Image (cartoon, rainbow, N blue to C red; front, side, top):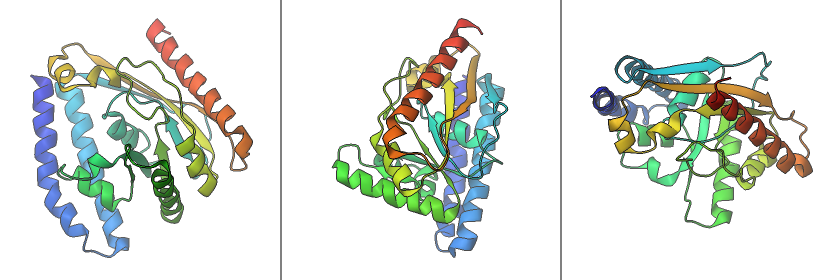
Amino acid sequence: MGTLLVLLIVIFACLAFELPVYFLRFMPKKCRLPGIDTLVNRILAIFINSARAYMHVDFLHDKGDFSLPERFIIVSNHQSLLDIPVLMDFFKGICKVRFVSKRELGSGIPFISTVLRLQEHALIDRKGRMSSSMRTLATFAEVCGKRGTCPLIFPEGTRSKDGKVRTFHSAGFRRILDVQPLPVVFVAIEGGWKFTSLKKLVLSLERVVYRIKIVGIGADAGLNKNTVNEVLERGRKKIEETITDWRAGY
């Protein structure tokens, strides 16, 4: 019952915020982008607070003792569509996150689709040509550089239904680094896999712990292209080890 209530709250909020975000598209960018950021933060607060209150989700944030650079690329494992708002909330106040997602999310969803387009996230056609996806990522990286935002990528390419960390694919990660040679911040997520389907969402009765933790900084801005795969694999293993420890109760 709590899950259905949260879904209804979020749907209502998205419908209510669709009109103001639609009108923001006609404003100059210097006014448009801060206005959209404000609306997004409000939706995030509504979602996080509702999930805590009615779904009994505990969001456990751990930013560690790392000294984060001014800008960086975020690399995370991927378990659920909820990972996106959860990560945006996690980095709120630290940086403005822009992520790589599938093109289908860019249309037909009140508020969310409009925000994805206006905030200039990367919308990739997973069935399209690789060359087209790489051009989209290059443009995305350039825009992030101009706007001072931090790109976020899920190198697994798809959500893990059981939460186990899959192979990290390096092509998209490498393309972003080619254009924006940023430090790499690795983040582990655990708990989202329990919400991988509408059925799981509706039937979820147990208290869910949604953990988010920075587990390492992979490289500085001088990252050599020949070491990209090595850095990415080290980050993947660190994320996997962290999740294994969590599941073992450490």
